[in-house]
Length: 314
Image 1 (spheres, one colour):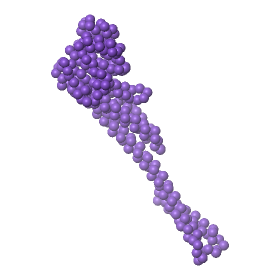
Image 2 (cartoon, helix red, strand yellow):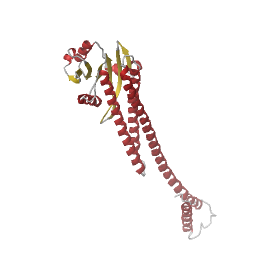
Image 3 (cartoon, helix red, strand yellow):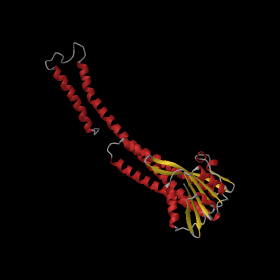
Image 4 (cartoon, helix red, strand yellow):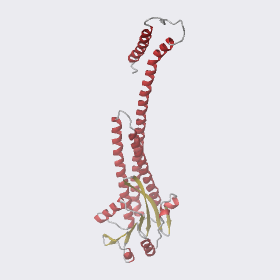
């Protein structure tokens, strides 16, 4: 599917027939969403541009993420989307040529849908495709902020649940690990945009009168990065708390085994002495020798148990 946005007077209108692109004036934005090969070739021929392949878009090298060629700004960025399987990266390619924005992507994205809605509302005056690019980036940053806000709520819920747990559960540790992984993905996505936007800001092809707005977007990105750092620190604190609870539980178990071992040590010693195969042992031939040995064993255990109680070790 291809959506073409163009300006007619003060209004921004949309055209879905790619064949009309050669007849439209004041072209602003050409959005290729899972476009066919024929549609790509038609746009490349009419607009004198060349799109990157899906393999080139996902390259991580700086030279592949951003470059300028033939008066065209080429930038690739990873957007983040949430589904039933968690967070996943969504590669998007941007091109700016003669202040016309071209976007190339596979599949749908909420950020693009929200941007189109804002364009339809018409509250903002759009001069050209650069304004739409800035709106798209601002919308994406707002989405990242929403993801971080939802993540913070999950961290708070996890913190309260952990404080109420008398015994640490494995599910709690797995939840903390999931939150750390998702926070890392959000931070990686934000840093990716920061790198791309910083390079665009230095470009001579980007209009000077719109660079201040781009700087504001970068400031918002820096604020989100600080927020992710705060979430990381809080999750590390929760993880340390969880491990502390596990250590306390293990110490309690070790203490119980230690107390049991010490309590049964004197009776074992007494039983060992009276079980020696010698003729001369006190009370060996006594008619109540067995009961005397049992009484000594019980009294020794009770005396140690009373001693531990007095020391409040158990």
